[in-house]
Image (tube, rainbow, N blue to C red; front, side, top):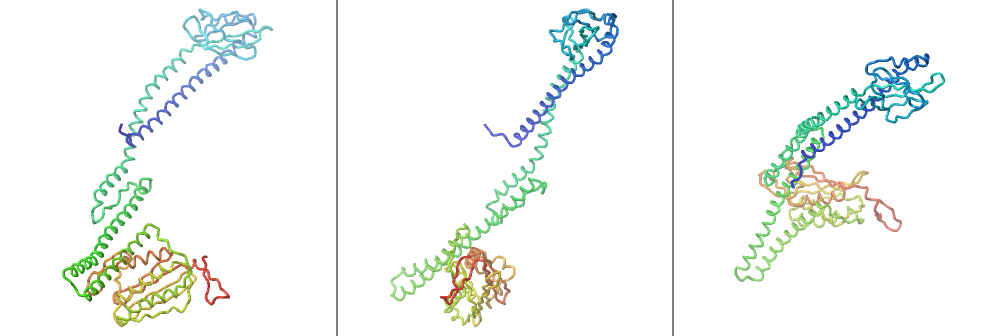
Length: 475
């Protein structure tokens, strides 16, 4: 059986609630009316009986009740045993009290009948006449009141289904109008689902009928979600494209070298040169794969860094020593300002890799006979590590994207495209995992300055009498 739609469920719920409320209201009104009418009749009977009882008490020997002939009102005078002493003229038959009890101190009200057909509302009023207990039975017909209740019941039976039909029509209109934005969102989402493979992106803003109600806030939330998903899909698609491009070159070199060396017998020197080239390309592939693995772990939130005491100035010195040979081949001097001893608690291997990334990039993009400056400083808020080069620089329009993986930008001056690889993306992942950030200032032809900011809250210095250096512990 097909599940009911949200619209039909809302209409059913709305009509059910309104139907129950209408039924309860009609029943309550009918009950109040059925109670109020006898109460009103009781008051009328009491008001009618007062002057008559007064006359009977003041003139014990008069037969005033026998002479009474008031239309719509009937009277009987009873003794203590219930025998009729006097009866009004308009009573052709005695009032059948149907066992209505008599109370010597309070009036008693009930339903009686006259003859076999007419139903009346009756009151037995106790009083004293010349030292004797008497009861005045006053009755009025209930035909009008019964007809009023019957008429009300017929009206209710007619109004109830009409009210339900009107409620169903109103609820159908209101629910349909309320769900119209959801239907628009659904159609728009289906359209975006069909465009999900579009390389230009699938996301367009969802329509918002009213931005301040619940549906408007829902649409706004979905807009933010879909925009993020669209951006992630684009980045993933671009990442796969760029990664395959980066991997294609070393794989092609490996394939070419392998085919060349297998084409005919070679000398030992030729085998050595070919294997050296293959080893270089394998190292490139290894670096790319390890970088991709590091970034995938960072994306999954599982890049767990160690927490061990290190001295950042010493780690920087070691990194500068490792890049010294390639720097000398381009006659690039590495100027270090690492006089300050800065203790830190972190992952020494990742910090070492982080510093090598910026030093390698500085040497790679700097011209010959230039300088690369490395400085270290610490204040109350952060540890600052600066790498300043005199290289080709980065155009301002590319600065927001340099930390993206394999971001391809044009070289300043010649417009040639070059890939940024994975280095800066890995550096950003490492710094963020340490709770820090990276700042970049650059301009084409003026070089670049990368500043790493690491939090100092992770470091506590404790002076030791037995060691010239300070020991580090976690805060």
